[in-house]
Structures are given as structure tokens and as C-alpha cells.
Length: 180
Length: 204
Image (cartoon, each protein chain N blue to C red):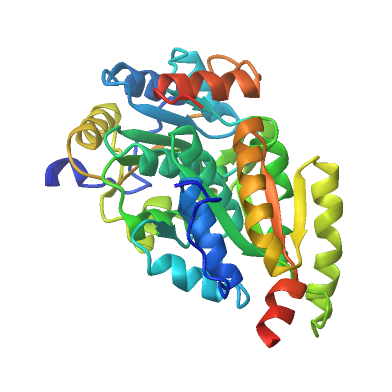
């Protein structure tokens, strides 16, 4: 079933769309370190037998598991929040990038647009410079109508070009949409 | 469950063995295209020196991630046995991975740790295992029941045999000496990854 032809309800939430697009791209291994913003997505993934869902102790570990699974022929994604991403430069620079392993990352963006923790706000500033310096494709998803296109096309490109990719869930999507 | 094989020596009583020799002993037993993920530094140098099998993966960085990478391979290919080779310094960096492996209990995964008590590649500064830390006790505490110190080479061989036959996960620890590795891995990341995937029968 292609994503384009999939039946979709106009009222789908962002997390429902993500689940549908992951399935359409045969991404079935989920390794996450929890986050409040990601909680509805994590709940949905746990409830769906299609996915093998792992919760390792650390984001680095999750990247290692997804990288190993890719080399063994199974597609996976790492879910984390901004502060978790900040623990990853070494593994991205020494494993995912040089070995050309398409590690998919979905990062809920904390520390901006209404976060009240200075620690989150500071660590958030490090995310894009790290992604830029490693040459890793990244896009922020800010609108519900863009979720399907950005997630689907970034996954396709990551596997086609054998490169890691970072999908950033902006508060414009996850907080503003939820408030409507 | 081979109870006799799993009887662990204590760390203090375990014989100091040679890492190159233990790598060769493991590789000699791999006749079913088992996958091996060699951790950073001298661990994968000796894996490389034991014969460049297409089913070997050599980690060039990402210290501590041999276990998670091997676990990922084991999840993707449940019919294939997978070994993670790590050093004590590396394993100490990612101890949570032992709990992750214990929770999911992959039947086809074995972790082999060479504990020389030092960061040999950077000048042999002591690791925590030179003081009070016992990696088999930590593995057991993480939930890996089938964890043992190899008393000597013969016991190591029996432990590896058990990991090849019976259901895992397994944690096999061996104390190793101060000898240098028997070779140096060719550091070509894309080639290593391509050959490993080919060795596992995976096309992009």
C-alpha cells in the first residue's frame, strides 16, 4: 500500500500519521528514550503488533541497535527529545555517518516556544549546529499538513542515499496543534 | 541448559589468557556464518587478525556500542547466532545495554568480554575492573542469568560451545594478559559495512 493511496481521515493526529508512514516504509523497529511530547506516539506504537518496540537506557544504545538491525536487513527508527540528541554526536560521527548507515531519528524539540527550563533551552541551541556540522539531513515539522510529506520523503531519501536523517517535531506541531 | 558449563570461576581465580588466542578459538568454531561484532580498539584488531570473515563487523569508533549493534543484528536475523566482542573499558561505558539485552532476551546473542583491567590502547591506564568492579556480577545484576567467568581456555571453549548450541543470551567473560594485538584492522568504514551486509545476505 503506498502512502499516497492510503485511506486517511482528515482528523488524523500527527502521531497517527507518523505510524501510518512508518508502516508504509516498512520501518518496524522502534527504539526510544521517552519524552512527554512523544508519549502519544509511543503509546500508539506499543499498542500495534506491527512494531517491535524497545526502550534502551540511552539514546546512543538506541542508535547502535537501529544501526545493527539495518545491517541485518530490518528498518528502525530512534525516538528521543532534544537533550537525548545532545548525547549523540560521537556515535553519529563515528558510526552512522562514516559507515553510511541510514539511522532515522525523530526528535521532539524541547527548549523553545514556551519551555521553562534553561537546561532544555541551552541544549536545544546545540542541535542544529551538530546536525549541520555532520552534514545530516534535517527538517522541522511545524504543520499537521506537512507531517506525511516530510516523514515519508525523509525516510525514502535516507534509505536511498544510505544517510542518517533527523525529523524534528516542532512545538508548532505538537503543542500548537494540540491546543486547537 | 548446560549447568556445568555455566559454572563461573571467580574473577580472582580466572586464568589470564591471551586475547588473540581467544579470538582465534572463537572464530574456529564459527562454521554457520555466525555474525561477530568487534568492539573498538584491540578487540576488533584481534578479531581482524583471526581471519577476515565477511560476517565480521569492526567498530571504528562509537565506544561501548558493540553489544547494541550485535543486539540489532540479532533482532534482524533471529535464525543467525550473533556474538558481541567487547573490552572491559568499552563495556563499562554502556552498562545499560546489558539490561536492555536481558529484558528482550534474544536467544541468538552472546556477549564475550575480554577483561585486561586496562585501557591498553591508550597506555594501559587502569579501568574500574582493576579495582572492585566485577563484570560478571554486573551482568547477572542486569538480569543476564547465563553469565560466567571462564576459568581457563578449556572452560572458555565449553562456554562458547554452549553459546553456539543452547538458547541465549549469554555473557562470557575472560581475563586477558598484556600482550599486544596480533594485527591492525584496515580502517575503511564503507567497505566494512558493505562486506558485513553481504556476509549477512542483506542487499540494500
